[in-house]
Figure 1 (tube, rainbow, N blue to C red):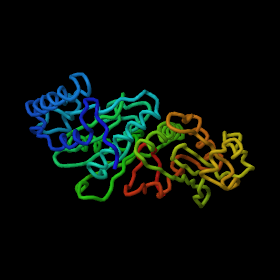
Figure 2 (tube, helix red, strand yellow; figure 1 turned 30 degrees about the vertical axis):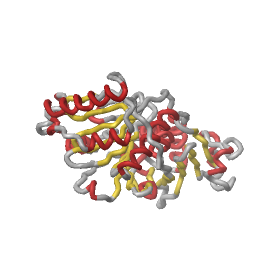
Figure 3 (cartoon, helix red, strand yellow; figure 1 turned 120 degrees about the horizontal axis):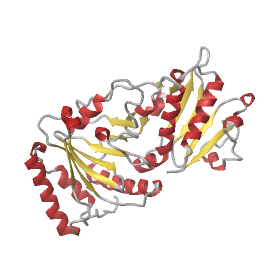
Figure 4 (cartoon, helix red, strand yellow; figure 1 turned 90 degrees about the vertical axis):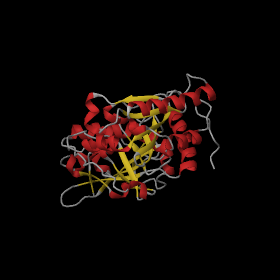
Length: 346
């Protein structure tokens, strides 16, 4: 069991989560939502003062009206912890909240990252945007990365899922981040949006940059490890070109032959990246590798450019020929879709 952590108001996090899940929202109409805030506010002032962890309602704006029926508000967010701005500290604060909530509520039905596009086209923290959802009807409880620390969010289920579904129109960068679901009763009836595909190497480079920038921090925050492979259509085959180990630290390897001069693209060997021996003990298989660092450390643009330049040198004609291995979709009990990469799955 995880030791209980008090929220900013002094109330144990698990107690706050249970209270939010049991709350009566009045259909998220104005009177019901405000009554909920007042109830939480009275409890908060008793527990730790009116300024700490103040609940925050998000009203429906003109651009969100198409996602709602009669709701006047989209969510109630309660900051539960603060951390210094660096990625490692933010990831640790999120992970601590995640572990306590999982002990209290069970495994979340949905995990993921919003990437660079937050709910209803909002902004996301620069270090990463992980989230967990305990999906319900009519409301869902979510642990979300806020700009100063993790937040508990109570929200009507239909609008947030309608917003996500509206992004599945296929335009480049329409959806960012990744989404993992597990087979459980809570996800009955859950629909997933369509994916988009990168149509240029520039788009693929941008997508990989965004992915690498936050990957180690988000994996640390969510408590998951990802082992991914990228394949490339070369001639009549599709060999494995790259290995990605998204545990902390992030490691990327290339299977390029020496005559391609991988060092000229930025690859090193175990001599330059000694920690990579923990991931790939064989010095020569793979020979070429990069230790990209832990949360907040990857030189994401340079790493993305190295991967793309190597793929092109290997003979991959375009981004439609750079393929994500299907094994990457299995993360524990979750099936993960990597919307933000814009790559086909093989």
